[in-house]
Amino acid sequence: MGALAPPEPFRALLLFLFGSCIGSFLNVCITRLPAGESILVPASHCRSCKAPLPFRANLPLISYLLLRAHCALCGARIPVRYFLVELGMAVAALACYRRVGPGSRLGVHLAFICALVVAAAADLETGIIPDAVSVYGTAVGFALSWCAPALSIEEFPSPGDSLLGALCGGGVLWATAAGYRAVTGRDGLGGGDVKLLAMIGSFAGWERVPGILAVSALAGSVCGIGLACVRKDVSLRTPLPFAPFLCLGALLCLY
Image (tube, rainbow, N blue to C red; front, top):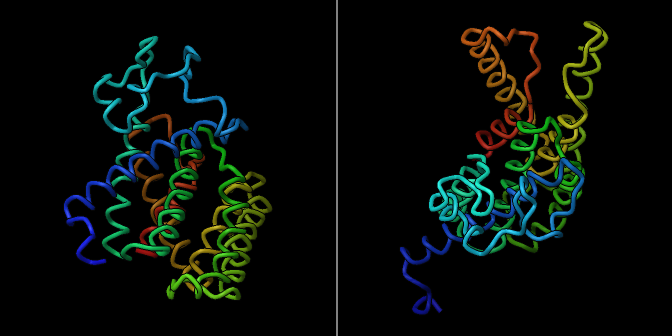
C-alpha cells in the first residue's frame, strides 16, 4: 500500500485544496448560522443581490482573487473574511496532517478547529456564537471521548475528563460573569462565551481549561488596552468579543 501512496508534494496539494473547500463551507456557516438560516438551502448566493452564484464564483481562494473581491453578478464587495477563512483552513489542514498524520485523528483535529473558526468569526461579525457550534459541539466532544480508544486517538480526554472539562469550562465563566454583574451591575460575559468554553473543555479536558482561560484573558486584556490606546472611540469599558480570544487560547494551549 505504501508504494501506491501519492508523492508528498501531491498529497500536500490535495490537503491544501481540501482545507480550502472546508473553509468555503465554514464561510457559509459563519454567515448563516447566527441568522438562524439553513446552511444547506438555498444554494450559494450573493448576500447583496440574492442571485445564485455561478460555478466560477464558487472556487475557494481562486474566485476571490480572480473577481478582485467583488460579486461576479452585481459587483458588491466580498468581505476579506471569505478569503482568510479559506486560506486559514487550507494551512490548518496541512499543519494538522504534519502533526497527527492521516486517519481519524486528522478528522477530529480538523473538526475542532472548524468549530473554533466558526465561533470566533461569527462572534466578531455578529456578536453571536451559534449554539450549533457550542452546544452541539460539547455533545460531540463528550461522545468522541467514548469513541477515542476505538479510533486510536490516545491524546483525547477520557469521558470523565471530557465531562469535567465541559463543567469546569462553562462553570468558571458562568461564575465569573455572575460575579462581575453582581459587583458592577453590567454584563461582562455572554452566555455564548460560557457555552463555548464548555465545548472547548469537552475536547481539551479539564486540566487544560485553566491554561486556556489564562491565555484568553491575557490576550483579551492586551488587545483591549492596545485598542484603547490607539482609538478614541474605545475605552477599557468597551465590550469586546471574547470568543476569538477563547479560540486563540485553545489553539495555543493544545498545539
